[in-house]
Image (cartoon, rainbow, N blue to C red; front, side):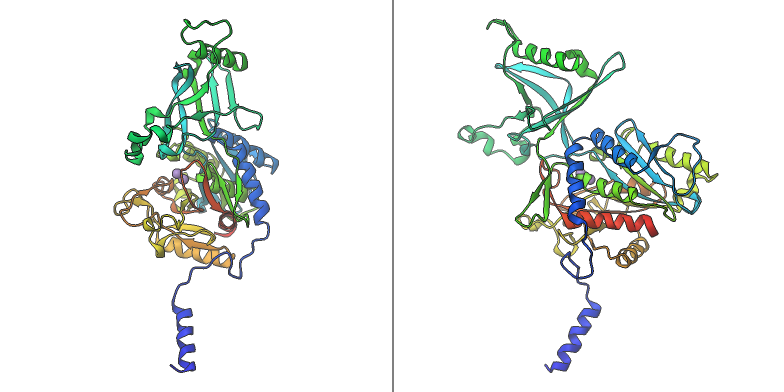
Length: 469
Ligand code: MN
Ligand code: MN
């Protein structure tokens, strides 16, 4: 082949073929990426539950001038408001220059993560040990949770209306908790079981003490349990009955850490979906006077199907938008039909240890930026909202113009499994919606991994979306 012909074909390839870009290609600005991720790591360490994420998010928002919204409040462009839903979800908005009838730009993430909840009557004693009965929350591989240090967080609501906050294990001087596992020496039967049966749901009991109460003799039953209740009563003023109105959970007692010699990755519990919640929050905090009103929704209960009063199916969201619409004499129906939503949630990243579950050409990779997913779902896209071609085209244009590194992802090979996000519940409201978020390794495990460059590009993508979509 002649030199001339070779060059001609090379040019033709460059013109016609699609080559995904990476964080190491020219044209992308990562100034501020690492310090952004330090802020994210701090958010993770303070935000081990949805309630803790709400508190931290409100603190950050108030520092940036956001004020609590109350119904009927007069609003003008540039105003920064937020509203908390039952301490478990929060919505923030920056009022734009255009009227609300022209729609709002929404980033919707979730701040609940898979975890292990204590049952309503949790405490018992067995063979001289005190333990908590649990019921896991969200999709976990149960075998990943024994033999790792666990923190305990949550609230106990008392009959007199007081709510006691419990938080044990995040301070280095705190004790932690653990679910025990079987020694391999006696694991003959266990090791021949299927992975899903190795640890059962009722086997996820959390060890929380072993010392009997002072003065007990060996004939006394439940002396260890009594000692634990004594400690809890002294510290929180609670009795065993108060567990009935408590929300307590255990989560991994790991701090967010850099991974790799090059510190390019972050390992932590709860990236799904705080790794999109934090960029969404920071983007709205950094949005001054958008054209369209910017809205950031940090929802609860996504991991169990967006159900309940604090999940994305709740009318809380509609009520808030309706309230701000009424300040401008606009109907929420008109607002929704002109609105757009990035369902900012994580997706699977190509894992060299498990390449067989992802299809190379249509999966997200670490360090290739924010990942759009046209659809999620399972078995022929069932349970997915399937974003429109037109929406994707306008986002391609927006991201390219703003030098946002982005990629297209999908949740594994066809018929390999599947999943969902809040996208379908936003789309049901007559809002154009697409999934966009950070690719994750070891998703739903106690210690998930993401790339810093992708976290930062997700933030830049949402900033661009708020600013000029
Ligand atoms: Mn998620
Ligand atoms: Mn999830």
